[in-house]
Length: 324
Image 1 (cartoon, one colour):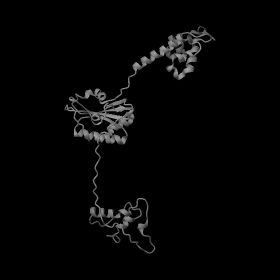
Image 2: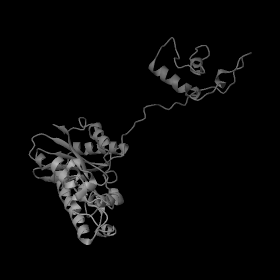
Image 3: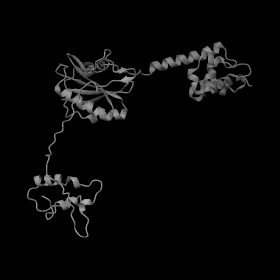
Image 4: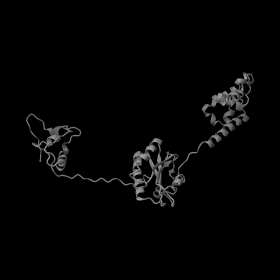
């Protein structure tokens, strides 16, 4: 096997690094510089190449014992490599921003203190993933916060884009009083209802003011820890805050009128038109339709059934045959 000294200077790892820079070296050449020397029967480049091939993608997770399994690698060289790897890992981790985990109302409040002195009302959204890591903080609206102005699409549009699992909303009261107004409660109701449809948790709605803070989560959720996440499950206001369901009023009148005749019409050479059936047939609605027409179109002289199918509606309003 050729010794490293027998390789042309331009191709030796150290000289190549100094002349052309680190980008010109392969992984095995960089490791060769770290090893310093080879072993009996293998020069340093060949030894480094053997280590890279053996561990591949698992190289950063090497242990001293892993390296000691390679013939010719002693404890000193193994410690040298592992120490270099650990040093790089620590510097790298220090340079990467740590995940901002939102676990309680206090975490949100600490990131929203700039709202206390605002002269206008703000609505700010904190978008969280399933582990409550903050994905993004976004201002949704500025001005007088009104339920008619805060549309759910402004909140959930970005939530869908970020694939957020939960949302925390923060609202400031320039008056200084953090107590929720009736309008605040209506807004929470509206957003919770939209969140249920979208499948995105409304984790909390927090009001910040000069005199303190108010958290709907802490107010309505009966637990000691007051944490947004427990045993991997993200809490929400869905089950702890009573939402107002829309009320629908019946405006149609019940009629006791016989809406269709049970008598068979016998006409030579014809089938009774009421015997024709298909999905969507309005036969049983005839009386109801007639009542509405009579109520809304008093004194009408002509009738057109533009959605004619079997023709039962048109027959009903054929004044020569209409049953009254």
